[in-house]
Length: 161
Image (cartoon, rainbow, N blue to C red; front, side, top):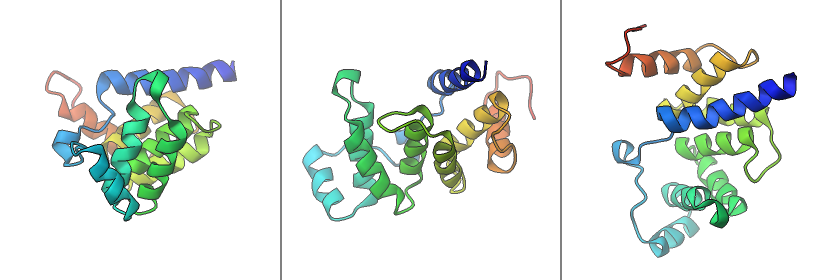
């Protein structure tokens, strides 16, 4: 039963976020990755956290057959080490879901919390979802604020908190 609940938590996290918008909206955040690949490779090599994030995002979000999780992990780790909140968020997803790394929910939660601590709304939303579907998620601070903010953002929702 516990394995079923853990699998359900991962499915709800991934599909709930796709449907309800946990992923970052680059246009709103100024994190768009619209430059040429060569530009990002040069900048990432010089330690630019945004360029490192963009290379990681590219490798993570390619079509399934072409994804390169080890490369994505490398770039996200480098950017996260410089406190790039969306790199931290993606590391949370990769560890929590076991994408290219052994699944480690504690490590995933650590990265979600770091990202949420930098006021990353996507990470707050994920923490809120996890708070709702698992008993061991820390249901305080950013997790609660994130889910309340998320609910209140939608005008169609009669459940203003």
